[in-house]
Image 1: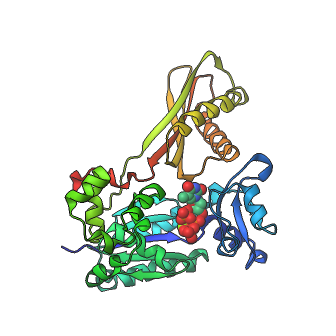
Image 2 (image 1 turned 45 degrees about the vertical axis):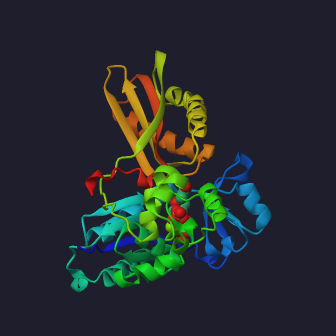
Image 3 (image 1 turned 30 degrees about the horizontal axis):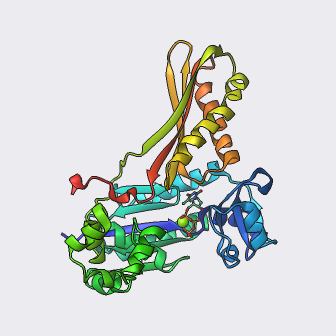
Length: 355
Ligand code: TTP
Ligand code: MG
């Protein structure tokens, strides 16, 4: 049966929220991120700022060279998280099959949804309108028969766009699609493909699955499918993320919160070394673990995408440690901090066993 998949992605999410809350900034280049004096990086920038070449993950100092009048606002994760969970509630009016990818992005499988006579395009439009009505920020959405096409489509007419790729348009849509739009094709793979003269999915159609496997290894069969607009991955509401963590058992229990927090910078340094050893890891969340002197253990976590920004992560961990510590307020024997991570092209490492 043909599925109906929607991908919703908020437009310059953090920046949009900040401009909404400070209307005098409307029309000005605005970014959200760490301060240049603390070697911070930008989480995102609005579309006005992007015109100057300002990009996500760019060091704030560099961004200010591109655009000296750029207004850089601090990150307010708690605020974005709250809006994100409200938006999730809007999705939940239409389906339970929701796979959040980050605070501002999710896949929805609306194949069985009866609202709007089951029209996925009208459901997507209703969701976009509802988000705008309640939060005064815009979302873009893509609608198609699978996750790959829905995701590419949501990006097609950003910001504030809706793009629908119906089943009979799939072949034409992928024909001219640049290979850089495929999950798992980063700059390195793209350059290799360009050397073969492969620029669009249409160019890939000339290669057999065996050829692609020979040239691109285990990714080959995926390429073969993607070039044909095929993607069988289900929308998975409970996708597990891998984690990476470091912990420390104290030789003497930490008696109060300030004492406990003293050990945070060293743990963050250690985590950073671990994180930087692996290439192209995306951070999907942060987590802390506390073991009290009586061996009771508790954890607290925040999900959401992060770039490695020391000051921001320090804030997040401090917040979580406070949260977790409040539960028992006693001496602590162990503190652990971790990241939920995903390989940038991990999308496809998902076992196809579910299919
Ligand atoms: P994106 O959807 O990637 O970006 P965006 O919403 O800012 O812009 P676009 O209009 O192109 O969709 O990410 C959503 C938010 O998550 C973004 O506002 C900032 C944050 N973010 C990080 O902090 N780190 C990351 O690695 C990514 C990808 C996003
Ligand atoms: Mg977005």
